[in-house]
Length: 296
Ligand code: NAP
Image (cartoon, rainbow, N blue to C red; front, side, top):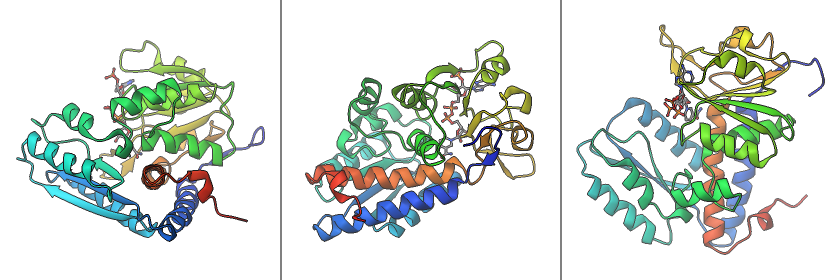
């Protein structure tokens, strides 16, 4: 990125690149007799979850993965889901397990996340993977945070030495993004609902990540001129339109680079899920991921 240049980060195009690289590696795995297979558990009939699962299925198949979706009733007992996961854990032909969140009220989400074999935990939410991430050890990294870093890298936006501010501290997005930025030598501030003077904290950042779930919370005057802004939020506006956590029209006038919603982080999340599944399949089959790199 040149000084003074402004651009909109095109997550769709970058995600397509990642997906096609994953597809090449999946083809190489298939030639070696490994068919990467992802099992998705969808519990209940939340319409947004149904859309997400359909998109994952479609993208997975497009990249040459086998995707099985197991749909369970909202009234399913936690023990029944645990038994299903245990079966997937023991099946060698299944390399990735994803439980679509949120689970219906009354289900024990923690028990479910803890039950997934860490080697198959393509959402990176098992405590073993969370610990590995913070210790800088090899493990599976949550898809949205991994997508944020991949998008910065492929947009040639430097991370090392930058002041980063993340708004949101969830286990799914905020905290793992912080861990990844820290690993890449950014200086990281994590903000949340109790942070005093949030706009001032945000304005200090050269890299600003919004993962809040509040439509257009981040205004133009929260952004340092030239900063890179990643908008993770997905919210429905009053008119039913999808909007991010960032007031896009204002922020694009100030930021050096900004992701749109839709078409920013969302597509990257799915691309990283496919990559995690293919990586997990390679690792479980004793094949080095690097050895699958397409030859020039
Ligand atoms: P979450 O678990 O609800 O966490 C939201 C975080 O934002 C919390 O840490 C909360 O602080 C903080 N927060 C809430 N209101 C705030 C405010 N007014 N000022 C400052 N901080 C505030 O949500 P999440 O799972 O991280 O998801 C965040 C957003 O990203 C949602 O819109 C979600 O739909 C979206 N998302 C998108 C993708 C994708 O693929 N693009 C993937 C996952 C999530 P406290 O901790 O103090 O409560």
